[in-house]
Image (cartoon, rainbow, N blue to C red; front, side):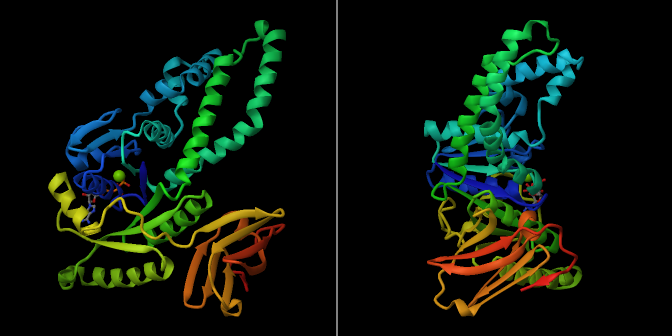
Length: 399
Ligand SMILES: Nc1ncnc2c1ncn2[C@@H]1O[C@H](COP(=O)(O)OP(=O)(O)OP(=O)(O)O)[C@@H](O)[C@H]1O
Ligand SMILES: [Mg+2]
């Protein structure tokens, strides 16, 4: 099962591009499912068809699904939910509020990821396209499988043992309900499913992320951060879909300045994401709604290419810990290590290796550290940081 995740800043065109990709994949005979994980579901509006909490057939080979958190919680988290509701009720929280409290913001994506695991095992679809909520939420949630992993590793065994002891000793007289064994079994099951989802998400032969951008400075800035964090979570970023590019005929009049501004920003995109394939899409005079408009969008993005193909992903960046120090690893093959320039300015790392230029926004842990050493090791370029005791001053420049 091929998984394509579209993400990007609010309003850049994620939903339209997701729907267009799914339509194009289905037209090529791929059994395709498009999933909306944004609770402000607009996928149905975009396709102009009603969708629901289970896959709805839209066209030959095409199904659509809008994740409904309440349905998913009932389906997947029953034991966990029941316990949390009892726990909250014992603390005097009314049931109707408790039901709301059990839902975490961004849970749509978690639910979608669990469904992905299900679909992958059933083998019902060839291609799954994920239309996500704006970047911040999505990134937080894409990191969830690893965050959850940590939590489970540390607490699951301990909690279960502890609860057993407490239940058999003070349990009957305590006000607070103890979680049942069911609760722990459910947690363990979720844990296993998340572990599988993590494998699925970080497998570059199955899952890639495509960033949707507009040629606007604020959009670009957020997209850079997104790129860094996606690498941090081990996801493979494959494409930039540059949406809303003003065509040449829009040069004159009111939009002349817009065109100029876009030209500058398109050049910036090339500098920042040089190695990543960019697929430009024109700004249409009208909204992109319904099959016909979406098919045109799909054709403008992919031409005759298979929309589910893998574009050559940029040399992956890995953020790892080596002998206790944060290290960035770049898969870079370069014969002359003398031809390397590395500069850190605040949380941005500038790297030039021969004709290869790269600008990376650093995660906090790295941004606070100092570059200790940078060296080639086979085909890998390693940048080793020393953790700093306190944050650096503004605009500090180090080479
Ligand atoms: N290339 C384009 N030309 C003209 N209109 C476009 C283009 N791409 C998208 N639109 C329109 O812009 C609006 C927002 O697009 P869309 O809903 O796809 O963005 P989104 O990134 O999913 O937004 P959100 O962050 O709210 O989910 C829609 O009305 C859509 O039809
Ligand atoms: Mg959307």
